[in-house]
Image (cartoon, rainbow, N blue to C red):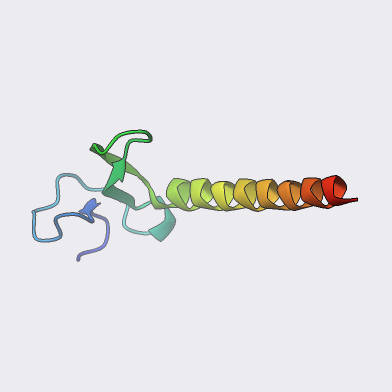
Length: 79
């Protein structure tokens, strides 16, 4: 794939649809299909790679915190 293009992760053989600045890999725009929560449907979402990575990191941190607080609650109940 050439640098500075929008990539569609679901259809890599489809021609790119727009260009972005090629000098910054984090600002590369990436399109992918995401499942809509609570449904079996998906939608095509295009975002900057840096935004996707930040959202994923935030989600991992939130999940880790929920798991930690849940295990702490179980310890309090068993005492």
